[in-house]
Image (cartoon, rainbow over all chains, first blue to last red; front, side, top):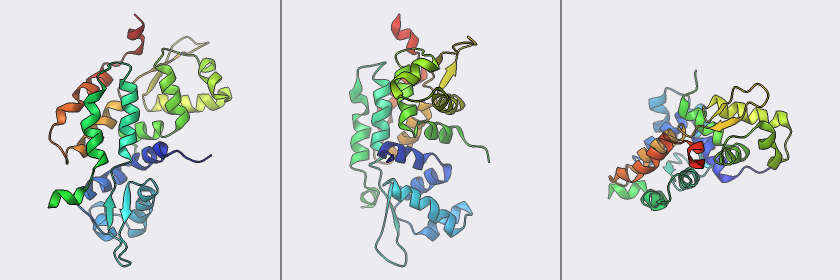
Length: 115
Length: 115
């Protein structure tokens, strides 16, 4: 059975190191070496985490063969919010409260913040 | 290393069957047999999923030794929203948008809807 995208996303963020990596990437692109530094982890261990995040579409890698900098892709988180919103629907019909967050996740572009 | 609560919650909902079980429990308490029916799954397979959900605090089980009905506990989902909110914080400072959802998850009581 193929794993659905939402399950892939949730699995990927169900790890504190991977969540910390995503948080770090909010500051902008980073190389594997830069990502490994604060975690006291080996490069292969970090690469394993990056592979999971890339598989879930939560990061993309640059084409620079040497550095392949990692970049945040927040779009899959939108589906997580959608699912929790479906839950909240049972208690309250004012669904537009989350619209702002959904829009921000949709147009997420961390590099734009720097300009 | 002990798994943190947020990782436990995310792992638990990173499975379509477990998410469907939680959705079913929005309609009220259900026995294992009732939960197994729509999924065409064996009772032991459903019990395995329930154990994961119970371990993450997303369901509780009744004391009736025979039926042990399952009940939804939506509170842990609050932390998932908190984490995604921390993400959204980078794009927008109007954080109060999610407050309503957080409150609803906090006071979640599916049985109350029936009264």
